[in-house]
Image 1 (cartoon, rainbow, N blue to C red):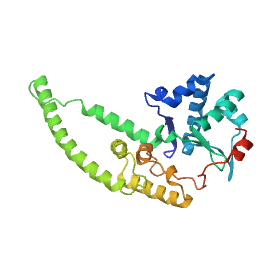
Image 2: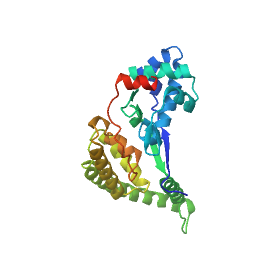
Image 3: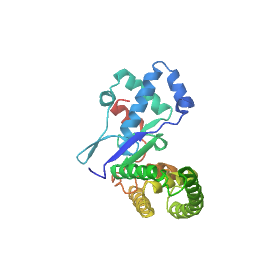
Image 4: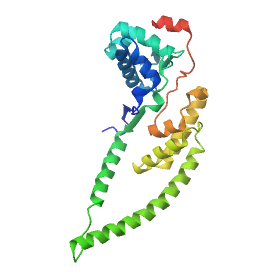
Length: 259
């Protein structure tokens, strides 16, 4: 099994369909179809950091509306109208490379490697074993109650000390990250990752690699992921793209793509 293989999924907030933009979209004629098409585009963009574009050899080949209709199994007329609406209301933009950038995707993506999946399953198995008390001599019920009480007190002390330590360790990593937004959410994501077996060194290397990539691409600050988003994705050691795909597109390029 390839440990480096990464699986992605789309995360929707419980009030996703109550958002003003999505509600407005659904209110349009064929709005339900537009919303479904939008979600399909989000899924297509997950593995390319929110972008939709074909990489053919060393070339980037944009998708036109016919290709989008084919890969999403969507009616061509629906694609044409929906793409115009999405650009107008800010759900996506077409970059100067022709890549379609899903602007909201940073808050909607999750990922995990095979190695992380195995670690999570292993830890779950260990935790399930730990909850079975070891009975000693005497009354089984009495021994079980005392064992659980002692274990609870010990865990409570350990958890308090561990939380303080985690907060301190996280602050050191947070100081390295270039876009310091969403610290509370980033801290929660960091603690989840530590439980899954991710090391601080792995995260530090991931930050350093991402910072180097951002400098290489001269990425505009608006395209640097918020700290909460980056810590949530857990892509600590992933290789990043080396193609500069930042910037907005003019109307002429959009027309050539058929949008």
